[in-house]
Picture (tube, each protein chain N blue to C red):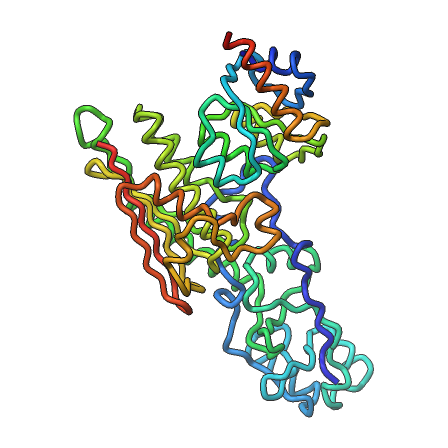
Length: 113
Length: 317
């Protein structure tokens, strides 16, 4: 599924989308960056409350193309700058992690069928 | 009466990243790594409170300095500057004791602050010098712009030599497994701004050399976790990495505070990180476990009160 399809299907806000056609293959929900580094699969959208640039650094390391910040948390300028440089998309949702993870899971499951 | 020092507030003086990205990285690292005490003049010329303004003026003339601290047994009372001398000359009070005419409302620096604080304060206050106090509020030095220029020149020369001695060379014919690289990154306590730079650099290099993504991820994870560990737990240290002879070796070395129980620290979920660190998504006690998991060889040596060294080796051949 492309990022654009994910944004449309799940009603997400695309705060920064460097490549709308980037492929998202799964999701990973976590706020612990060491946990993300240990277990987040490549191609995942990271669903998190961590709205700072270290999350971008971790996504770059594990090859996650997008970060979805929940609860409509503000995305600081330095996070936007780094994400732009690294080509990591920043998405946002008003929903909590569980609700939005379910939505993304359902959307990805449909495309897998 | 003693001086009323105005101590810089920490959040206010955090060094700004150069928005245009033009500030040389080496220089930024240096001004973070060097402390005020590394740069200041510790050989102080001072006068006691009972010295006259005339004596202070004579001392300033002899030593070719533009200000002299008023100090007794390490206790700092104030500073006699050229301005104070001129005022005393005009008012005809040059023969009076300096405790009556010295400047007592002063901005001071602390000796364990990073040099970046001092630079910001020179920029903000336009004073020629700042007295430096230690944690016990004793006068331990004085710092002026000239001290900073001299220290930076010395350190930059040293850095240049170090960079010249490290190198990237392709010595093999296939250009993949035979590269030799050595890099060192100074890491400052709580400097999350720069954490991840070493991991990113190593990752980029390995991608250029077309290493398998799985190997790159393992190396990058080890480097990133060790960088964060230095940032969160040490008083500052150095992360170095080396790729040679089919091995990637990443070493994090710091000078303190040391780990009391290494086996405990290496267990999943154990951490001494504070709430603030945890709120950033770090300090969950998974760092060393992650490093160990991705490493083919893992070593940690530490002693409470001294430093810690962690070495991770990942086979890349």
